[in-house]
Image: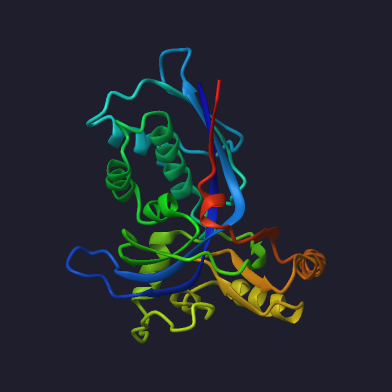
Length: 277
């Protein structure tokens, strides 16, 4: 039996970061939106009798979110050795949640194969242990996130946003981004009343190229543009897919970074998982 699932990237249309609390972690308030740029995951029993992870990205570290997820699962469950094929399409160090989405995809796949063992509650417990954003990817669609990202409030599927994402050559380490943010003063921001509002505290400390990309996206027709997560990817929101495609031609000619056309996903689309013999 082979289980296949998509592992969508996310954008943060709103992200406010509080100072670290007694635990040393930063409470956040964020609005996540799953998007069509996605990794792809396939799992099946391993014919070799040991875990195998096959990935098209040669820089996948030996210790990654997939191995971490399996380690936590096996603390309580007898998960058989797996052959995991991961096709990476989401860029690294971009603020798009690729590693977190891969972990959630593995949890969802195992929950589909063995729902009586890998229950939804256990998936959520493991998700939070693996990483802050993983819990959102078990919910998908659009959602509010609070705490360290583990408190998720699903939102109704909003209107589709057509997106152009630009990832500059420079990546951003999430721990370093938080460290820089802690050295700056910033106002406390609550969730906006208008969920279309774009805001991200990390824009205060992002590389200058990220601000330049946001400006150029708007020059080329975006209704708004914003850094996603801790960066370095920037997304522009367009009225239509055609306008996003037109802007992509300009951005490519200006050599501002790698470009990705995408759109926001419904909850059902973002959790798509299939079984086949």
